[in-house]
Length: 151
Image (cartoon, rainbow, N blue to C red; front, top):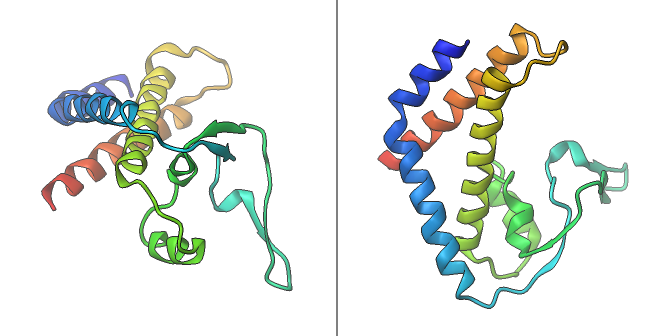
């Protein structure tokens, strides 16, 4: 697994550097803005949503609450569900730069965690299948970034 991850890292080195440079640039831009902060769930994804028979939606699992721009909660809202989500969210304004920053930050955190799981963690519970999943996620994140950069 280590060799496979290293090969993906080398292959996508320029993309990783671009991601880091973009994150730094966006951070500087956002620090100069006054963006309102709200209470954010910080782990908002479909598994943390429940809809009852009447159609009411409830957000569960409030373990990682944080005070941040609302865009922080939308890092998991991606195609093909993004349009429907934002339409259902209403007429609220979104800061595209903030949303891009938080999504990029999450991608970089995931790359770091993948590398950590393959190279550093030596848990007895962390088997080869988990390492293989980490390598696949690493590759998938970078492949998606490469694909988006071509558009």
